[in-house]
Image (cartoon, rainbow, N blue to C red; front, side, top):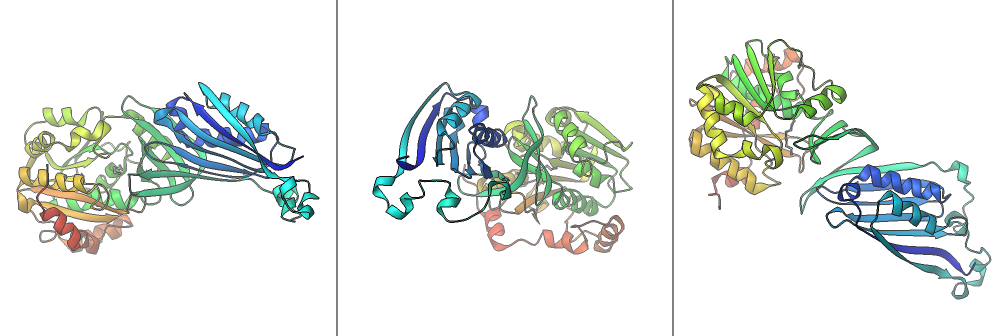
Length: 435
Ligand code: SPD
């Protein structure tokens, strides 16, 4: 042996875009490639970057395999580095070439650590494994393989990551979006749509309680509730706690979200069998368009972010229709994004509501959701009839309700506190929106 290690720098072109964007697939392929070459896998760390790209490394007893992908270009940059002469990096190359379905691949090999140039005493080691070179006497049997795989949601400037087991509990593509469920270590099961966090078992209660109870308590006597979206069932579960509600209509465009949630998030999807629920797997925009004037006391819009299937739910025309189908004294609630993440969207949403419902009828509430980017998320409570969520609420009733149902976030104080806005949010809502 003339070198301590062998390093091959690999270029793969023409790989299928979907494969290069699947963090779990890439991680598994890399672990398998290492095993195929008879390497001993120590751990793996892989991140998916929403919307595009995977980065990761598999550390092996004999060094490492690493990758960064550009799915949109079908391109993967890979390097395989092995120490000693037990593992042939070209076997990893061959395995990965097939696994990633590369249309074209190229690689160069570099010998690393030329023995002729290094200290004579190290030369005696003849290369060997990393642990031997460092003088450790750890045996292969004592080493345990740890996977370190991360889901990441990000925009150009901000990212939020959750570590998960690496096993995908659910993955399918509906006509509308990609639906996935992962098992995260810190927040339990995670539902994502088109790669964005929708809900997790451990913090879902914040969102679902706040999307529901402030509106129903401000209204005080809602009998007819319409939920648009909300396919995981969390909002409907909360609506059903209100005994005065006689009819709850839910219109979700994507049946796959409902099915995945029933299967993997049963504590959230727990009210689908409630006889008061009228479930439509249909387009919410069309439903609202066809609904009669004044048909609902409360309308809750639990949508994804304003792109993909939810785009039409963030339009002036849609909210005009919602205004029409609300009874006088009715209330609309909308998840209104984050004042810290996609700030322009946040401001546009509120400007639109003010134009339709009138300035004094539009109220912004804040909630703390650790698994949504930045952790600060908002909901808009919009009244048709002048009710004020703080002045017109019976806080004692809200408090008793919270107690009775064992709620974990909403209570009388949180009802009022949610509408107390920091100055930076007040300023955002004051500024005219640039077109
Ligand atoms: N970026 C997250 C926006 C929240 C969308 N709704 C979540 C659905 C939970 N029922």
